[in-house]
Length: 233
Image 1: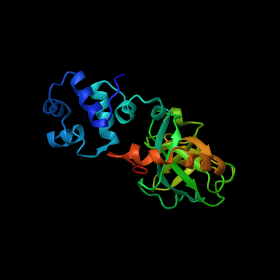
Image 2: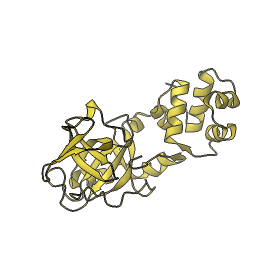
Image 3: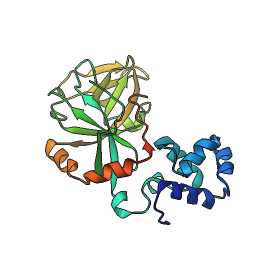
Image 4: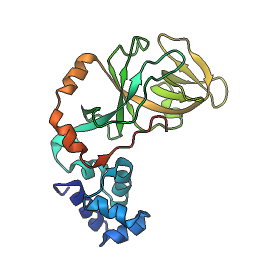
């Protein structure tokens, strides 16, 4: 695919290549205010990840290409924001969940095209799954549970707002789920609202290596991108 230097240049090229001669025409088709779209295309306005996904779909390109271009080094890594500090108490409290902050990003080797976030484990209550200060990467988008989640380790949000790091199983009641864990008693027939797959679990040694990985690239790659991270949304 064509190599262009900036996100705004790539966005403009994708728009023209998709058959929209003007930014105004593309904005109308997308249902986006012209000032918003024009600001994204001329690089004067930060662009959210959800907006990049929308543009990529409309213009027939990938989000990865819009963000990074075709540099192989960039395609092999991805930026992963901080989701929260996880105590994983028996009652399901996920301590200190925060939205992503610019000072809490890590560059991970690319393992998925789906947006990820990372959780830092606090204490020893997740033992059997992860120990203190290990990192757990999860898919950033929480979705209602379905058949694909059954038997998988997930971060599960139940009715009432609590989060559990558990393996999701079918419950005895229709539409309910059992939450299995290695150190806690199984929670039966919970009303699970949304879940996120666990993608990877990293030991402290692996985290130290990640912290050495292309530190200077994080700020550069983040420039002008506003990532959407809303825990449990």
